[in-house]
Amino acid sequence: MNVPQQRGYRKKSRDQLIKAIQECTTLSQLFALIQLEGITLQMHAQPGASNLAPRRLTPQDIIKNNDTPLERLKAEVLKAIGYKPPRWSYEEKRRILNEIDSSKTLSELFALMIKEKIVMQMHSQPGASNLTPRVLSQQEMIDNNDTPFERLKAEVRKAVVEQ
Image (cartoon, rainbow, N blue to C red; front, side, top):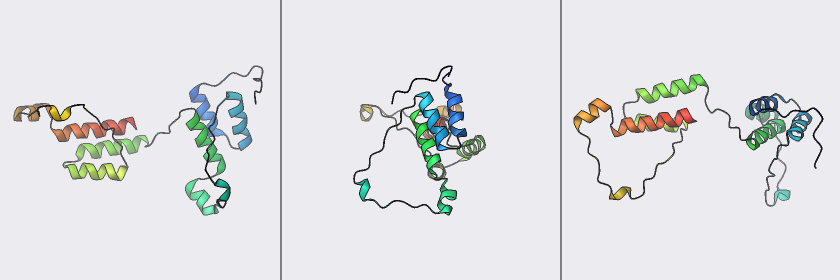
């Protein structure tokens, strides 16, 4: 379906496009935006989908999950343009960072990570088992605050900030 571009139409910037997608109130508006912007969506295939019974949503499910076809399509379009919605609001992020800073034990820190579903990137170091372990002196631990626990807290903070 190669439809010629409308005359005088200027493609939107990424921020304008995200806002326009989120403001669409009907499927026809969203489809028109997809067509004008030339957004390519991937089809999802499900083997044996014709054998599945159609899923009927109750009004409570729709309200609770915000699971309308329009919202699901908006999410797919946003994903197609590479947009990831922020995971936490500014206030939630501040609260989580404060809780990380105030944690005194590994168990508190791990409990917070589980509760808030914080995902950290694993670091690999080839040949790490061959390295001589670095023993920190008491002065280094006090002066630089460079304990393994503090380094872990810093990594958790970094994961929260990046999410």
